Length: 116
Length: 112
Figure 1 (cartoon, helix red, strand yellow):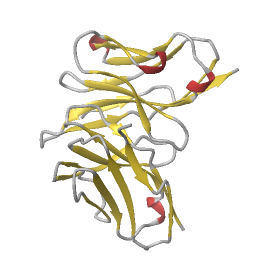
Figure 2 (cartoon, chains in turn green, red):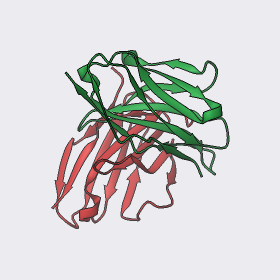
Figure 3 (cartoon, one colour):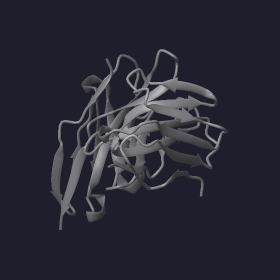
Figure 4 (cartoon, helix red, strand yellow):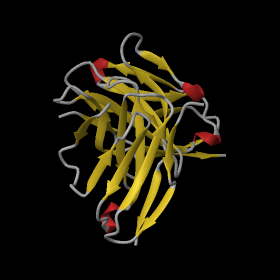
């Protein structure tokens, strides 16, 4: 069955430090992969997506992610974290249902705290 | 700006009293989704519409229904809310089934 694992429930970094959030997926075919960010009490905002092509994808707010098929991973990175990056981050894989539709399977999320 | 709008942002209802949540979009997307997100959990898909085609998730309780009267609007009806239905309800849209989803700000439902 398709699944997404985000091994880190909570991560704390200092402002200005680099960040890497881990994501591993289980999916039989070539996956569609996404990273979303959610601030408290808000909806989800798309940071970046991977459909095909270049395995290093750039997103908004200075984030990037690298798709590694051999490791079934899609880790999110940012070279220098800002206090405003504190939020919940969700990795998701797009899967095809029996009806031919696409649905997102989300990981459990990683809550990022940023220390000044 | 094109967007996904959810009303109300906060909804309080009583145990067993029907409630309707609203979602509208100006993106002219074909697909609209409803997710339930409980505290500190990932969003869970309840159902979605591809145009007028309704697709229910196998584990969505019968207590949850949806209507899509036109391309722009989609409603979530909870016929008899229980305490366990208290959650954030997120609406999302996508152009087609294989495109990324755009989320609204959510409706926080409280059941007393």
